[in-house]
Image (cartoon, rainbow, N blue to C red; front, side, top):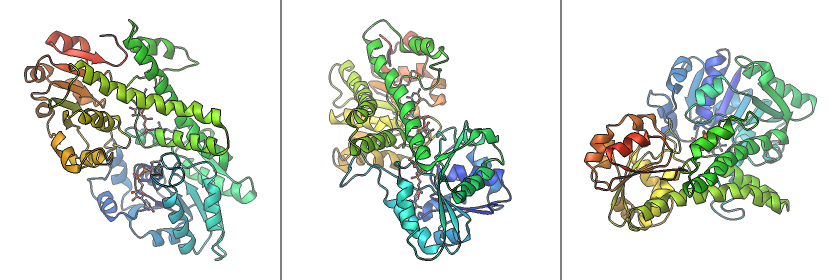
Length: 461
Ligand code: UDX
Ligand code: UDX
């Protein structure tokens, strides 16, 4: 039976997942380790490094009891029966597979750290999303340590969605565990199954081979992203006709074969996983000579890029073909509500596009730090950091962000935006006062009554 778990990587995935395991399994000691001392220090306070509803309550319950945070990776590895690898796997920004393949350098580093520190047999669990067959790389490193220590490698992809991570972990639709089809592999899968069975019904814990498990994660995200791109492609058609994308979504979602979720038209999908996982899938297919399959999935990304650009272009053309020197207020910067995560957030691409036309952007987001907004826009390398600071101003207050603006763009569907005093906002804006609702979040009828010119996704206005 597993008594001690170590997780390498205290990020958006490792942090919440381990907190819930510790909460639900008081008999297991859970050590979360990370190379970043600032992050570990924050996990020990009530100012957690990530914003996730309900997370602080879970952490508070288990921290100091059987949940610990540390930078001592070696000690964590030595003490553990089971080690989760939950480090980031960004898209490569250099060399072979640049812009497409996942960068596995952190995974490899973890494998080497484990190989070096381990003094007893371990089960190593891939939690990070990885290209299919990464387990083989891990195995190659771990099995060549010459120390006599035996490793079993499992794939246990994470399906939690940010903003609802705690609920997703508490009530997972399914947990996927991939392992070797050998007696030792089966024993390792069973050991991990026992951990999850502390709070989830056994029929939801699926065991497969390693490759199926790795591929299922990429496929699940590709299917979800494909639904968003599909509905977004039709939103463009709706804007040119009398159809309304929300009515279309409702109508098709009522078909139980299609289902109603992930049919919300938007400014585009973001987040750390969708684009990266699809690029991965595309890269693997290309590498294997499956050109048509690669092209098929790549179209999901192409459509998403089109949607972000279309939104920005719509602002530009509606504002009489020039945004130069005009203030445009962004409400929302995070890639979705209830998170402070901005990875691949559509907001930064829309902002960048408008800044190319010298728009002055002011941004309010309830959870994203100002320095993060600057880091995001700087990361696009479109202009000097100085120029970015001239053109983009984070704001502490939504009313200040919107004051004297020519237009407001909704980039994230934060609930609080619905409750703002829109009459007050309107009174303090330039006229005509435009709202571009990239999430179809607000009450458009009310806004029009106030006097706003409203442009929404997938609606002819
Ligand atoms: C995740 C998943 O694990 C990845 O598969 C997914 O595709 C993207 O999201 P996430 O938890 O969101 O990662 O990433 P992040 O919040 O960046 O956390 C990763 C942590 O690993 C960071 O805190 C980083 O400091 C740490 N890390 C990285 C290590 O401890 N060691 C390393 O060698 C590299
Ligand atoms: C996703 C997967 O859902 C999760 O299972 C996996 O583990 C990690 O990747 P996440 O990226 O946290 O989770 O958020 P998700 O809720 O899937 O949203 C992704 C993006 O799609 C967001 O930008 C969201 O705003 C957008 N989206 C989602 C839409 O535009 N329309 C929708 O109908 C649904």
